[in-house]
Amino acid sequence: MAPSQSVNLPPVDLLGYGKLPLEVARNKGIWPAPHYQHSLVACARWETESVVEWLTYHRSIGFDHVYLYCNDDDPTALYEAVMPFIIAEKPFVTFHHYRYVGEQFQMYRHFLRHHVHETRWLMFLDIDEFVCLPGSNDISSVSTRFGADHDAVYLNWCGYGHGGHVERPAGSVLRHYPYRESGASPFTKILAKAEAVSYRRACENPHVAIHHDLFGLGAPLRACNMLGESMEGYYNNFPDHAWSFLNADNRRERLVQAGYIAHFNIRSEQDFTRRVARGCQGDFAAQTHWQNKNAQERAEYHAATNAVLDTYLSDYWEAMIGKGWQTSIVPCSQWDLLSRGKRATQSSTMHQGSRDDDASRAVSGFLTGHPQHHTTLEDNPWWMVDLEVLSHIHQIMIFNRLDGVMERLASFKVEVSHDRIIWKTIIDRQDGPVFGGLDGTPFNWIDEVGVLGRFVRVSIPGKQVYLQTDQIEIFGRPFSLDDFKAANAPD
Image 1 (cartoon, one colour):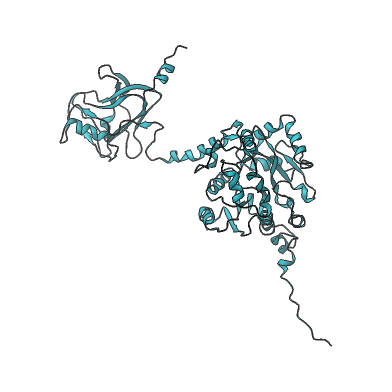
Image 2 (tube, one colour):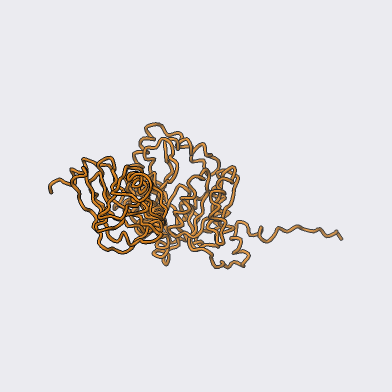
């Protein structure tokens, strides 16, 4: 009898490779409950500078997780950039490094094997693509609207142009590129239910671009576009059939209004060669056509992708980052500070030095919480600053002392003049409530139209009273003859 031989059977996890997602196989074919509602899957190469904006933007519209596949030769720069999204009790990013350049589909299949069960909805999206949902700015509005009757929702591309940049400007993509095509273009990205993206079929059909079209996998699929129209057969005879479909019934513009993928793929003249230099191996092979475009073809591409000024995304992002101003402890101004360091004088002084020296401390630009200038006890004390040029005065902040007797500024008057002879009263405060200063509660007067003047005078009407402040800040802009003519033009 022949001796028995031991056989090294592969681990059970390997037996299911290419068949079922790993956790589904371990769970005997039952899909576990998902951790996330809406997830993005992204392959990133040479995207370190823009990845933080991309992640933050998509988090702001409701995506609750991102599976980020770094395809850089060295992953450390990208990893460092996204560390704040990784090091958390509930990380927003799952990070993987894949060192084989251009194997985009294999990265997607890795996700389908190891992570697809973790999310209810998914989308394969590149770092130069932003999901734009005019009106809602909420990805759940898409899944809620279409999820009951559809497995997948196709969002068309709309290409954004280089805006005339020869080189990529540093900083925000959303703020630098407000020009786009006149409407939607043929390629799509897909928000799909996790179960609708078959891992087995993706392995059996490794060349199917599942990030653009799931019908290529051959499984039954209920899919629509953002107008609720069926997408079955959309990619047949591509792109001719797609263009015919888009050009009918004003569909290109209607799809942009409904929701689309803003595609920022060429952000400067240099990008034509940059896309090739980044690598054309594997699934990136199609990128070679960018470098081969001649001058006329590049000009035509720019004309098409810079056809329409659309500030929706840039306005959205400006509003997002503008919230930083809401955190200011001391109110900020949209106008320039005109008074800092300017010549000032006052009616008298209790401090050592001249009246001018004392008055100038009120426009030093430094807050202390104490009275930096101080008149003597007198009738109708005043303080005045010379802005040196005729100006549109839009805002005045007066910072009270915080070390006592704050009620001394309950009443005061502010006047402006261009010659120190004729004065116009713009503030006449009578026994108003106590206000602060350095603590963040100064007196704050704003006039959107603006008042013309060169000299600003603050006074306290009354017998035997003091005038003292911590700082007085005057904001505005230099006089504009065009603005003056427009404001005084006959109706």
